[in-house]
Image 1: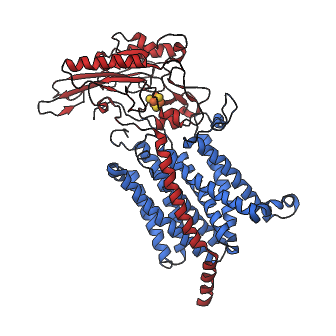
Image 2: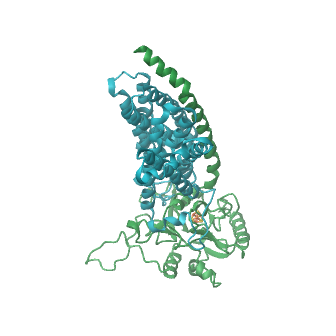
Image 3: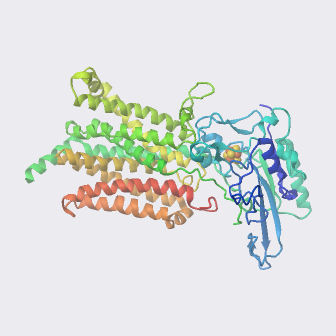
Length: 294
Length: 311
Ligand code: SF4
């Protein structure tokens, strides 16, 4: 395998311009999602309305949005109460947390683990890639991914479709080009490169932020504690949950052994119960008793 | 929790999967009971063995159709078994969806042989007469015993793998417990026993056999109650948000009360409601088995627990 490549996203410098989203759509030829647009002849080509949640206009990752910039408006009143609602009129000390979300290309990727067709594979760059001609749309990966990354898309079977997500621009990597989003990011919030190099850079940045008094700065997914490491890891300024990231995602296969052990124990108990219930002699005695009663 | 988008996506495993889990559970349960009856039950169990041979194959056929119809690309269903790029077999022992596909295939094959043997037995002579060796082969001797043991093992594996399938995810409730394999298996056994009580009671008047089935069903239901209890205890803090939700109430009312406690009471007091008592008990137990699958399958996808899902 060539060296592991991926993203380090420094959320402190994200300005929410969505250049990464646009670049992703352009390079991957993904149409804008028009689902919530007003339709009809009076609204030709109208731009997509905002969601009402800050400056967010795509809402979440989807089969067509492989990147999504999250806008989290956090405020803290003098009594310490936190608010995240942009519509809350009494907000104080507003802090804008922005984060460009994407597939994490996990080292122990739950989606890849469970995929029964082998459609999801690990590339030579250590990224996680879905082969579109192999996926049959079982959706096990959707249930497995703890980040809600994979969505089903395509015109097949009433919109059930097949699994779609960020490819880490596999086609570009094969030609030694950086992924479109990182190339487009004007503030270097999304940095692309060899993971080891990115980690060193990220650790230095955390130290710098700490020395500036921002003790809340932390890395998410840079070490092995989260799914063996995330090849798209983050520098966050608050708890992961604030950004909609789980603090303790699980490797699905860990449940298989214990689940099967409990099943086996139950089957043995039921086997003994069945043996006791079905014993031939017991049945004959019972039939005999009934005859006598009659 | 801030109003950012949901953490988990919903795989939209809908009614087809619920029905599949239910029918597959009965098929697995039937095969498990078939093995027990054949190995320990003696001659008297013949009517039971007839039904345990007839029931699984049609149920598994429906299951296969449902599973394929549920895929985003149904015509690619075979990618679960054969790698379409290389032609090599596709198998991952650590992925329940992968080994479950193989279980379905092999178990269906065994169930088909068992099913055909009964048909051949019924229509001796003519075209079927030519295959009269088949029932003899799988019913007697070492080969017959091996066949029954195999059926029993595959019935158990198939009946329980669906629990491992939902556990091997990151969805709330499903992945928060390791009891679902045991629960789905035992509920399948209980549902199969209830179905057998209905069918054997309808076609044969051997009360001893029906009574033995009821005895086994009582054990299965008591085990199921214990496992549901353990499941809820092991869910810990999230048991309460689950039980408060309509899917939790479905489990408590549909499965625990109507599907387990009432049938147990009716087995204990067989004259309580006159002649309909055993039929009612078995029907309620079947409904309870369906309610269990319905409750668990939807709960894991729709209940917003510790922020992982947004309803
Ligand atoms: S973030 Fe989700 S989709 Fe991406 S590799 Fe990890 S499990 Fe797979």
